[in-house]
Length: 322
Image (cartoon, rainbow, N blue to C red):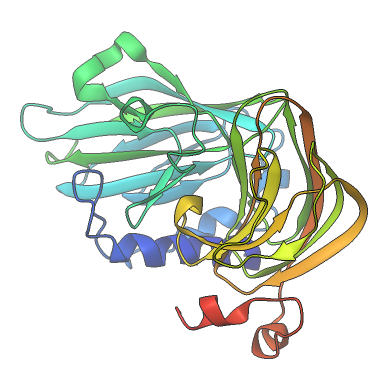
């Protein structure tokens, strides 16, 4: 079993089982009757490389990182269910309804959300997503099969549903398509390297890592010249419209995270920060006037680093919130 995916799923399940506040979107009950980490064995993707399409049954609470065909069939009333889909950073996710057998009039529902919702927090945030919030939901009970395929705007999407009658359910086919300029991303792994490029587009892009990490920025191309600095309540990049910020927090929504540092000037060479929060985000704000680019590496902090964080790190805010 991959410890990386196990950690990520564990984080998601903690938030999901605590979810109560935004009930019109989703409420998830305790789901201890199955092992959600079986999906993420270390050899899964390699073992399935020659099997197309991949098929398996869905659980009431599930997470998938592979394309394929997936079927949910209720064996009893299932009232609070969700399936989370995650692709590679450079992928869109398409969810296609193959077959749906639910009773909308009887209180069943099947909805697709463009992004993730955890504990009432959304990724991407409303500030970063290209669509208004209401258009990020696709409700089968309203649209039926007139809209059989829904494509995400980033590498994550989710389906949440309620099925009362045993035997009812649905079948979905999940596909991925290349995304030439990934904007909002949740990393599948606690370590890696990524280049975020925003080519003459007025948008905000967030790269989210659901681990305490050390982030090393090796290259930054922007349209303004200032310094890398720790952020104070009145400090920051001033009136600049193109910058990168490092955020940390315990939730999922970047707009609700703590701003830890601003990067406002182009540079070549390492700049590193340790962020001991459950979730760390590299966020680029772009005016659309420039081709902005940031290249960074990240790795999960070791336990001893969390205990002895000092220097260029901000442990107090996150650790006191755990």
